[in-house]
Image (cartoon, rainbow, N blue to C red; front, top):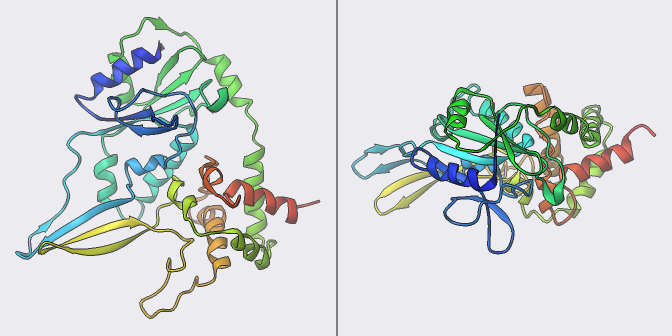
Length: 329
């Protein structure tokens, strides 16, 4: 397996720009990291979680569905000029992406989504390159190539045919024979948060969490919608038609279950008109409803909602409170 320095990877990603729309973690002027063009700012592979919703690369906050002109011509957006290459997902992000791939292809194949997702290339970053030096879990798949950091260089581990083709193009001076030690370190990472999440899922499903608890949590919520805006598995959107210069443009825009108009009907009736109900839905949806529908919970503990929530009611915080208050003593 090839092991590349940061500079070698930077050169590699620049060469990929002729064939791909390359998005990599970059360091912004204020020291934070974001996905962007490698020519816009310094490459910043290390640092752990990218704050933004990484799946927004394929499911953006706002996008045009179609346009209809006064001549009644129906125009559907073309696919991107180049396939997307996105670098910097964590192992948890890769699981989130796997889920929304399934979400957008089950029962109805979402053409808007797959125009961007088809032919794309996904790089996961793992190993000794997290925030403050923490070890990031090794994905072991669910991407095209994984860059596993050994503290000095990034070891390329391809999983798909595309990944193998790209690995051959990387010019570097080092080969690594084994990842055994890094895999052992990854396997030894604590699982307490996952255990708490699954225990909270059981407690909610068994109706052991009273309604007054959700009212308490809702009272802390300021409806900033930050939790939905950063969650890689939030897929709700609403549709709006805009009359613009003699044509109608239909767009879809992310929606939030924390807003009081989220499920309001045309009649004015809102089955989720109480804030406590919407707060319960946010947690119940991912931990119970999706478990019933998909066979697994759809929170992968990326931690973004806990990072952005000003009221400390992200999923990690709420599930811990549920287990502490209503679990077995």
